[in-house]
Image (cartoon, rainbow, N blue to C red):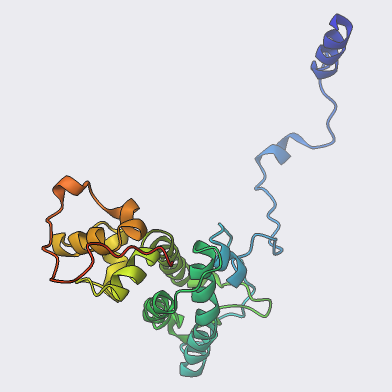
Length: 229
């Protein structure tokens, strides 16, 4: 063991005397060489879908000024991807279970961002290999934020809001997703969720002691949980 450690130390030790070098002394002050060729880290629809960090390194021709045709083409490319991206974001967060209402929410939020992603028609938003242009950086980040928000809603609020809609709790529908995921649902809505959707909403509900109680209507069951979900 000692012999092995000694051999490693000798191998890692710097040689005595001046180190041989084929570089002239002034080369140390030269600017570094940059390899501008595309890499596997390029920002694409796939990295947007997966939420991965990436590099904006598309090869796009120099801009020739604003073009309405190019702007419309940029928006169309991203809109065409919205349905697949939103469906996948919701389905992946719910282990393959769809939620059409939340997909519709995602598509509207996505469309609001895409409408500002034409980058004034100066350059294509993606190049021939599907890589996002550097000018589309803000657009890409905004689209990524939409998908991340929707994934949070799908994983935290989706099952609860589906039950709330079936149970006709106040504050159900599209507004439920944002309210529940941000813990901003009103007391009446929370009381109804606790009463009618306790199993589906238990992770998002405050302690029962802090919830207002609703008087059950005559002849109605005390609680209708979401066992069928």
